[in-house]
Amino acid sequence: MKKIELLIIDPQNDFCDPSGSLFVPGADEDAKRLSNFIRRMKDKIYDIHVTLDSHHLVDIAHPIFWKNSEGKNPDPFTIITSKEIQNGTWGPTNPAFKEYVKSYIESLEANGRYPLCIWPPHCLIGSWGNNVVDPVYNAITEWENDFNMIDYVTKGSNYKTEHYSAVKSDVPDPEDPSTHLNVPLIQTLEEADIIVISGQALSHCVANTVTDIADNFGEDNIKKFVLLKDTCSNVPGFENLGDSFVKDMSARGMQVSTSIEFLK
Image (cartoon, rainbow, N blue to C red; front, side, top):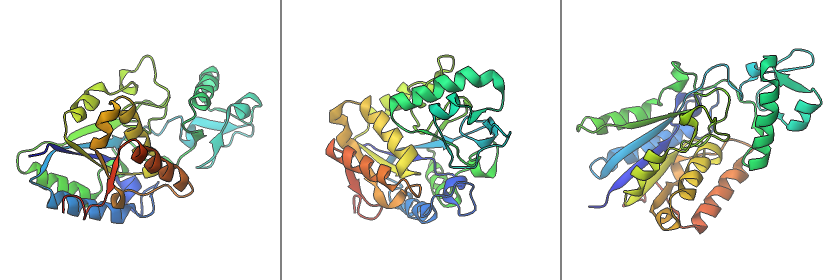
């Protein structure tokens, strides 16, 4: 029997429930399809890994962290650039972080992944929004009832850096190992025969997680990836990022299927 591992990225209320603070349109239906898939595959799944975006209210990508020259916080989805830091358009609410944010945003721009985007406060630790959305939670709990155990992987708790990828932050903090490459998770996935991928959002956390694993995985292992395309959606306005990710990873060997067609 093939060793099938399921990697579910950030299936949380704030992303997957229409009342969530950062709802990804379509994610509610994605969650229902994923839950049906888990039940159908219940006896074939060897392990389930669930990543959880887990933030403090004070976070470098939340409005509270920043103020403009008039003392106002930025609106969600504002992009802050190094040029705007230099000319004083935006600065940290706490002046002690002035040099840090300058260096941080320059590092972001150098790595070319994403600019600093201010998001609505989301997946706050201890909140409803941080919880796994009900359809997925119910399905994985049924899987656990056969004396299995979900591998929960938290990310994003370091307020000084962004953590789209579940296996490393965008700019690792030298003093915080949790922001560095999650080698144990990658090594665990290397032992699988098939790695089924689902979650939110395709354009951001799914794309970065899978890319980071692939870059530290060995090219021959990438063919183990199977993306369930009907259980992932893009953040509106960033569809091109999701499309580019699927195209690039498919060229490297990732397979694409659906929750219905996989091992039908």
